[in-house]
Length: 148
Image: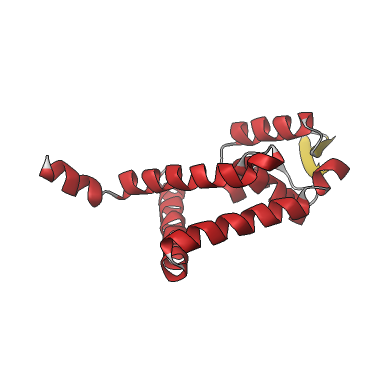
């Protein structure tokens, strides 16, 4: 049993998945009052910053599959938070008036999320961990791009 515990303690896959689940629980509480999932809020932030963004760009920036982006956009369109326009075979996503009303509350929810996890982990640990994970994601993404 001790060997399994040591293995899990040193397994990046296991530990990042556990960390993700814990952070998701905290994030869901921060976004609940907005009736938005943290993932939908992330998509909205990109749409706010880049009105007319393509689903392909959203997929790339959010590290999500195109089918997941389609589901997210469909859900947000149904809530009248975004509008989708098409030009030929291309689609473009922009915030709706209703969606723009949540821009500040979403920013506040993200700030509260950040403050909550930095209080728990400590600011230096949270920032170092975030940067290390960002770098690891980049290396893994580049590897998968090169090796399928």
